[in-house]
Image 1 (tube, rainbow, N blue to C red):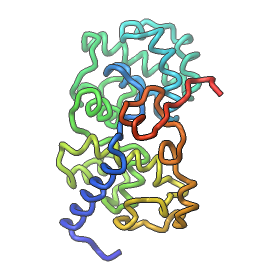
Image 2: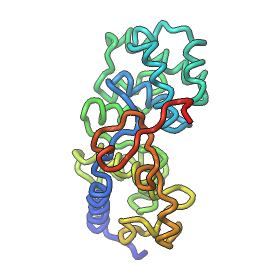
Image 3: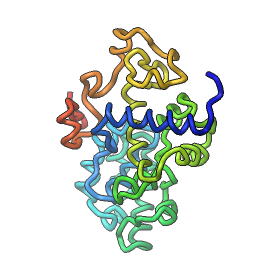
Length: 259
């Protein structure tokens, strides 16, 4: 691909986001949560596992420990048993109990709405903080997860490999007000169509704008078989997805232990 001016890059990046907004008008965080506390805990638990597995695990956790005060004084072995399906359950137990203690001790049991406060909580880095700020507090942020990193590099939005540099480079291409939904659009696309090992190029609506077209399956029929979640007719990651997702043909995920 011939070198692209910054203006052309901004134009192409924004067009991709507009197209993705049409493809995924129901894009949303794929972790089930009812309040900022549930979201911060679920996001910490989502490291090294799927959102689906977290969503299947958190109902039991939040039924037993509905508030930071409850989780702060929980028996670690009891929490470990609940979190076992998410993997790395000992480290995650330490993090969620630790962050609950910090919320009680430093923030009156409330999740703070500022980046600099959130990143002080055990197990909470910038990525988790931006998920919480964008989705629980409506404050713009870019969530640089593995899907986001992969796609923005495929699209040549940046050559950066470090999350904070990716965040800065991509943030500069868009108005701040777009950041949270941009993150959802890109992550949705990465999970459904633009997969890591075999992207479904032949079924991708933004193929004409993509410099990496052809890295994956280009035959439309074969590509269609690679589609995941609602695009492939399969259940999504949330047990309690938003109504707009259900209206678009998405199906709720099954609870833990169901066939």
